[in-house]
Image 1: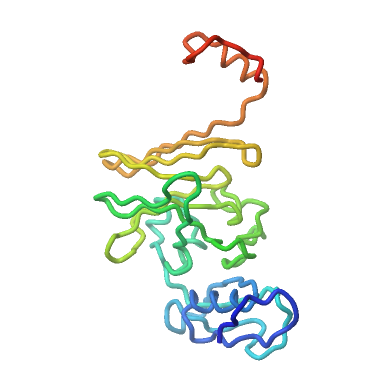
Image 2 (image 1 turned 90 degrees about the vertical axis):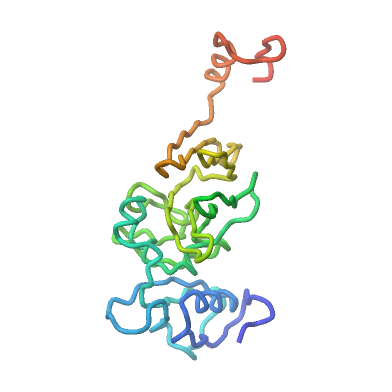
Length: 252
């Protein structure tokens, strides 16, 4: 049973998630104000994508806001070969689509674009900024805690986002493009490519652009670090700098 509002204090009996799809189980845990940490079941038994065990067990009295471990039978959103091709770590690729695909809303531009290749979305694993739903990696980084780094030099899921190419009919992940701290905020498409961008600010200073060519679906990413005062002045004085009025470095 789902509560009318998420609990933020007090205690409750651990809900029975066993047998549910892991997506529904995590959603129910969150609805009760719990923070789910999803771990793969390595026993080789059970239906793919379903919860087999929870820690604590159902009925245990626990505090709202507690972290509960939800063990589930893997149901891969990408094959091992496709994950290797796209530089996606296996802990993410082994998640079912119901947990992995969480399209973000409007950030600074459209975050969903349809093209003949499929539907492109900016997606985030930890969509509601709760603790984590993705288990602990060998180097000790808990996905979703917002600190440390995990395989292939990407930060934990607190900032991690992906651009996903989805099949329009089935929602299957066709390609995935992972981003760490400098993450895309908007998408645009032309006849030959998908483009993404981020306009840096004081909180997250780096800006970025990316292009995914429709001919080979390969990504080209450019990151533009925040300029220092000296670099900004030199940039504005550089020959050929495009401007519409007289050069005036005073604003810097």
